[in-house]
Amino acid sequence: MGILQISGLSKHYGEGAHRNEVLDDLFLDIEEGEFIAILGFSGSGKTTLISALAGLIQPDKGGVIYKGKEIDGPSHDRGVVFQNYSLMPWLTVKQNIDLAVNTVFKKKSKQDRQDIVTKYIDMVGLSHASDRMPSELSGGMRQRVAVARALAMQPEVLLLDEPLSALDALTRAKLQDEFSDISVKEKKTIILITNDVDEAILLADRVIPLSLGPRATLGPEFKINLARPRDRAAMNSNAEFIRLRAEITDYLLNLGARESSENKVENTFPTIVPTPQTPQKPSAHKKPAGSVMDKKFVDFSQVKKKYPTPKGPLTVVDGFDLKVKKGEFITLIGHSGCGKSTVLSMAAGLNDISEGGIVLDSRHIKQAGPDKGVVFQSPSLMPWLTAFENVKLGVDQVYPKASKAERRDVAEYYLSLVGLGDSLHRSAAELSSGMKQRVGIARAFALSPKLLLLDEPFGMLDSLTRWELQDVLMEVWKQTQVTAICVTHDVDEAILLADRVVMMSNGPNARIGNIMEVDLPRPRSRKELLDHPDYYAYREELLDFLEAYEGGAHPSEDQLKSIQQKSATRIARQSAQKTLPKIMAETMPETMPETMPETMPETLPEIIPKIVAKNVA
Image 1 (spheres, helix red, strand yellow):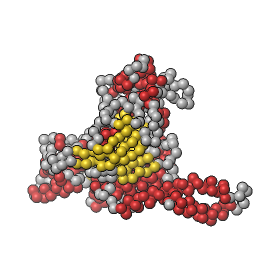
Image 2 (image 1 turned 90 degrees about the horizontal axis):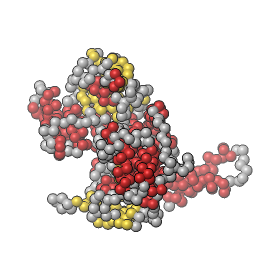
Image 3 (image 1 turned 90 degrees about the vertical axis):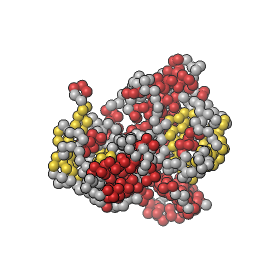
């Protein structure tokens, strides 16, 4: 018997017509020192499960057994970190952690307690902010305080309910490494709820999906037989990691597909669609989207952004130079503080440009306007308006000369296109986070912008919802072919969406560090992407770049040359694969001998190096 068992656990909320069956008959045996990752998504009951394990709620049936005894309440032996940090707003960072440590370790000396507090504040990188109040911290920093507080109580079992979801990629990676280190060195038992497949594989001994609610159950377990310590970049080329990643992702995609088919509502497209094969925009929508430009549709020319500080001007972005073709999809990636969102806000006309300029369709960008559609991480809807009214609010302003029926068609068309044809008249307050973001996407496209700007639009959503909305975005983009720039911290999202991935160096004085062309067929699906022979080469190139700049580092010329060489080798290989059939057709006789398959391995090595050498040169 392990240290912790979940035995037939079921839980519901409400009664009668409002009864919601959340968890149904869960069983799980967890060994001491084991790291379990439970992949839970929105509405699956993950917080209910963590609350039951912590003893904060009582199940309807079954229970949780800790060290042979059924738990009947909370205990410091089971430390909890929730998605929401719940700090005491009147206490400083240090005082918030002091409070927990002093409660648990009353018998330790004052110095020992102080050492514990200092250790865990250092661990989460908040030594510089130990005397700040929570109101002075960013959301990510507050979550780091909550993580430090839980770790400082030194529990035997650590329960983590998506504690890293609000953090930037670099801080998230740092804390993932700390969790892994604690698990290995202290043999601490950890149960992590996450929606990130990579995070689950990186950290866990077993990965177990939690099915979608209501009546969620635990799915099949995936054993992670990867040696520790696990390195993110090295795992990318590990065959077992690639197999596990594909297998788990496929299971989750199928889970989501079953859910969608069971709850599918047939949307009736408006009469603006003239043919069943090619939906077209309403006539009122066509003129604003027109353009006379092509190769330099968006032209960033030596763009700089400086902010005044007490110590003098701080240059955040320094010499950002990029030409974007009409209809191209660009993703912008880099560590926090590299100026990604600053570049996007300048392109949107929301932030003044200090030096240089940005030209959109032959006109300098000087202010915000409907020709530049923006989708933020939070869609900022009017909660008292319906989904339709939120979209039509912008449409009415952009198409003042269109008829009422035409404006209605535009709003309904794009809401239908993002899968909300059945929810047109639901108020924004009633919508889930994913549905609200769908409205935000529909609203941006409905304005017929010349440039679509997306600032981490799916950053706060669970993986399944994020994957679904990436597909929605790609489908709508395919219909409109609008020029788009998307800021993301997600390597897979960057590759999935982009024609080119633009990588930024660290700030201050951030600039473009590398540009990667993504030569993968469209339309793209996540499953096809995972199966594509070049996908992990693209992924490795991005991971190498991000690793080179990790922790605010400025890589050496040798590091950057190594990344460029890998890129050149990949491009050469892809070129060889495309060129080889033509060469074979030109050099091989029309009638192949029956022994050809046996001679092919000897022939190919002679042909491919020539192509590779030519392309590298």
